Image (cartoon, rainbow, N blue to C red; front, side, top):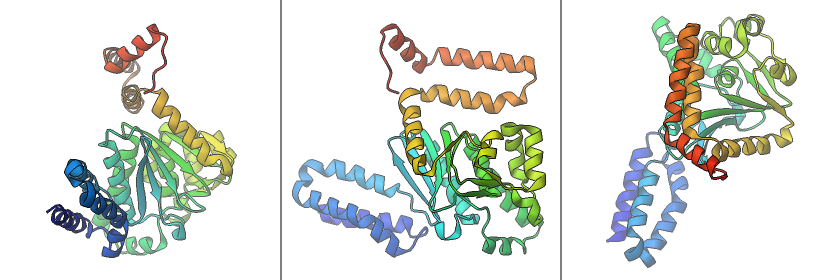
Length: 321
């Protein structure tokens, strides 16, 4: 009987995911889990049937993507652009996958921080050539729909209640630079080359402008988008496009230490309120902005996180959030 249930659950798992990838990849990804479950069912199923049932539920919720990877490690949701042979160039499917992963992490209480990185030498060089060939044939309505998809991705990152960090190496160009600009933090290797190059190809970085103006101001935004120039790591740090430049050999470790700090030393509730304040306060006149800040401060003070923090301080203890 247990083996029959396993076969049924396996069939359900495969049928749910065949629309995302080929059968070979699904079997390869799920086979190690199935071996573990067969062993447990054969030898320990009277004691572990409930655990196995819950485990099957987790597998059913696994996401298998074509162009990105998504993993959760120690409360950090790691989204990896996984097209190194294409310098992690974007296409319509990849944009949808990125947004799906962002929304999934947003709704996962086990994720506190989001990290976006790229596999290979470069972070992301913008749209792939093959996709631009297809876009060239689009009419106005089709281009509106395509632009909306990228806008939704940018907005999902910027408005996420989780802290979003970009880990950038090599080239971050056009839409790839846009991805960097909407993240809360950007750590870059010393080989960084970043630029909004759309103007050199007859396009405009329209979707990135709103976020760029907030991030680096009008003067720097105009310089970047009107010239189409690609700048180096030191210039990007000076322009506030990235927060920190790190030697490439230390980039992974530096980012890991920072995500650990956020996970262990900061309150998720406080981070969420602060992100909302920074995003919303631009829309208010000065007086209303101050009132809005006062309301947010009051909400924070009556939160469970605030009470926990005050108790720990009074007791002389350190909180591990």
